[in-house]
Figure: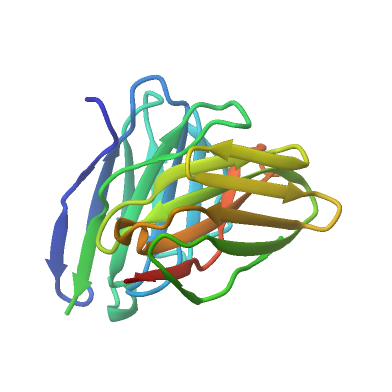
Amino acid sequence: GAGVSQSPSNKVTEKGKDVELRCDPISGHTALYWYRQRLGQGLEFLIYFQGNSAPDKSGLPSDRFSAERTGESVSTLTIQRTQQEDSAVYLCASSLSSPGGELFFGEGSRLTVL
Amino acid sequence: GQNIDQPTEMTATEGAIVQINCTYQTSGFNGLFWYQQHAGEAPTFLSYNVLDGLEEKGRFSSFLSRSKGYSYLLLKELQMKDSASYLCAVRDRWGGGNKLTFGTGTQLKVEL
């Protein structure tokens, strides 16, 4: 596709359930990022991928959060045993690997944990 | 690590000029970005600075001083549609050289 695609756009789940969020980056973009944005807050860095490897996982809030990327394309962010504080919009972005490569964002996946 | 500071809110008048400041601290500066985010939408790219000086792009300009750890975004001829959150983001050369950390954003309100 022409832009970054994320699914689902909205997800409502019960506390304790696992959720999986998907990101399809722009074709040819080797860098892929996940951010979390709570209501009225800024973007909180979670993890980024260079190709299929993740040089920086420092933003993952706990071991309930994990992410993978395959084929230098699709990435999934998995949240296990969801908690109410996990409720947020999860934004994915991709970019070329050049230092000046701007990030192109998807529309986000809005997660609500009841 | 990084520390990025920007004002939480600003208000300006349609047709005026507004300057949004951003200060940062990082051990490995590798570029600074400004993004615009309208409520309920994804952020969109505005500007990129890696060398000192002013980058102009239409009504928007961005300035960088690496020695001072300081940047500003200048918006001229303000329009109502410019009401949005403006995010300063710093790229760090460590951890693969592509990590981009965002500030909390400055909510700009343009009034008549």
